[in-house]
Image 1: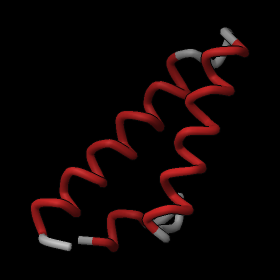
Image 2: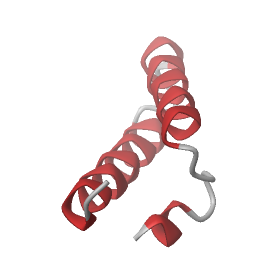
Image 3: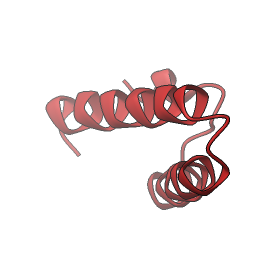
Image 4: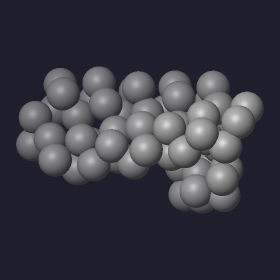
Length: 55
């Protein structure tokens, strides 16, 4: 995986994390974003707390 790919992954995870916080009162939307975030973290094998280390 190239450095550019890793940067894209980090940006996507950051954006999904922001969306989870932004929609915390809309349970359906929040749960969808949390599920997507969880799936991507597992797929890319990065920790939700230190995904920036992937760079």
